[in-house]
Image 1: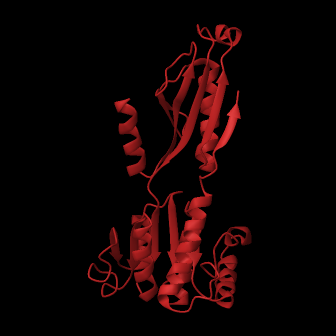
Image 2: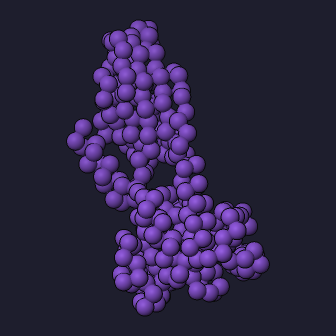
Image 3: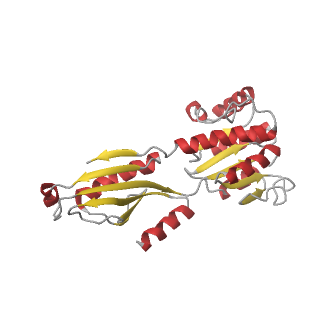
Length: 266
């Protein structure tokens, strides 16, 4: 069991993805007791066991879906004596197995360190995000202005991209000081695995940037995944209100991602 928790810590620290299957209820004669766990990585390798045979194979298949969809699943198994005998197991009870998604903590990358970013950072920390602020101006992206930020980068945007670890638990907000910087960041960010990508600005601005990127070979379908204009429509005007609208949209995406528990009976 200790090995599983060590592996989970490594996966989270490296930005990986996996699924943890736990026997939450066992009745009758079952291969493993309640509390038994098995970690299934995105590459299909496992640590631990909750029974072996076709039972474990089924769980591994469903774990792959949990990793892909980031949605937990609750599975119920009726282990008849006939089925158990076919797997070489001497059992005939029932088991409930909960499969949950394991991923790194949600991380918000804020490109731009202006007034809106200040409020975004504060709200993001309150609601449980790791926050990384990026700007090419040291006088803006510094610890005095952003005491809550987990990390700060101030350098040329293009030089920083390779240093940022973006994965499916990442959220990217583009609020730089100008169109050309927004476009440069978006061109990089849209190729990442981030589960949310938003860019500030009017529809006219977004259309112009999208057209420029399409001319460089970025697909229209990919650009349609960008939240632009960014944030929920709450008639926000001040930097603080705009930050609220942006974080509200991000929270909506975060809660939609991985909140539905599906029940499966096998």
